[in-house]
Length: 154
Image (cartoon, rainbow, N blue to C red; front, side):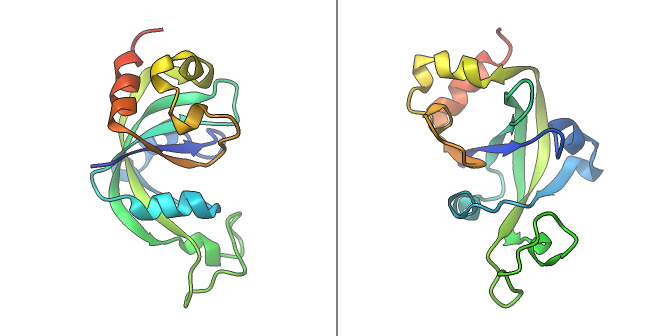
């Protein structure tokens, strides 16, 4: 099993939105960064990911999701009405992929980016490193366990 962090703007798709979906499951579409896409290609069913709210008042980790369908073609790239449309991606040679995620847990509080940056145990966590803006990041098992250990404490 691998661990990940997946970012979403809550005004676009939040952890609460996921919890309201049928079977609490939804496709994670619209990733348009090659490195983030490559990370997504490594995901397997059963992997776990932190759900991270970005570009909002309280930026941080808000819960956990599980990968329930591994990588497949992101059809939004072919939909001209979609904000994720990519005219360079073709059905014959698709550029983008997605996975399906399922709600596991919403934390009682947001573990803010500011708080994460203050934890020496997370000094090597890609999320807290300067300039890292990828929407999908790998998380080590040690980092995963540490974040879970502080989820209930302010």
